[in-house]
View (cartoon, rainbow, N blue to C red):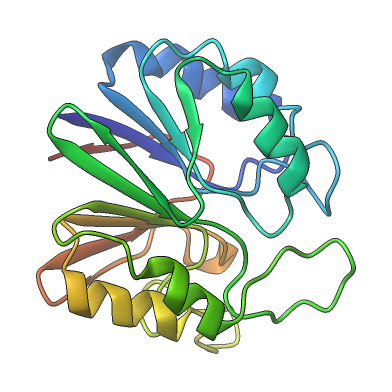
Amino acid sequence: MKLLAFSDLHRDRKAARAIVDASGDADVVVGAGDFGTRGEGTTDTLEILREIKAPTVLVSGNHDDFGALQSFCAGWETGDLLHGAERVIGSVCFFGLGHEIPRRNGADWNAFLSEGDATRMLEPCPPGAVLVTHSPPLGTADWQKDGTSEGSAAVRAAIEARQPVLHLCGHIHFSWGRTGIIGTTPVHNLGPTINWFEI
């Protein structure tokens, strides 16, 4: 199965158009959150991404209006929003969890989960799934410019316990393009570019 994956478009229509143009070669497209910016424009890029013909799985970012994202995906025949939920495509299970984990941004628009809530919502993730989260795991592909590690302990624990075949994330802009391995699980912080994976 060939995956095209990205994160953090932040209303960038040109980047969204490039993803649509490349998606004809994908079996599945994965969007790891932050389609909007500061709670606004969540559907700006989604209106373009809806042209993708392949099955598409999304998680919400901390900059997204979660209600707007839910409503949009409810009318998208091939698109699914995963938030503590899974979708099986072919023989592959995709499990997703959105938002910032834990909360580090105190702005009113910031969508977040506590580590405890994230732990509970990640419990149904089956072993060997493709895990998609907005936040990276603590200590892997989660470094800020000042060297601070700002990932999620809950996401890391879920990876350690369930060993997904692949973990895709975004959120920390300075770590876009960074990778790592937790146990046997490859971890990729994506960014708003076209990233290809074979599983």
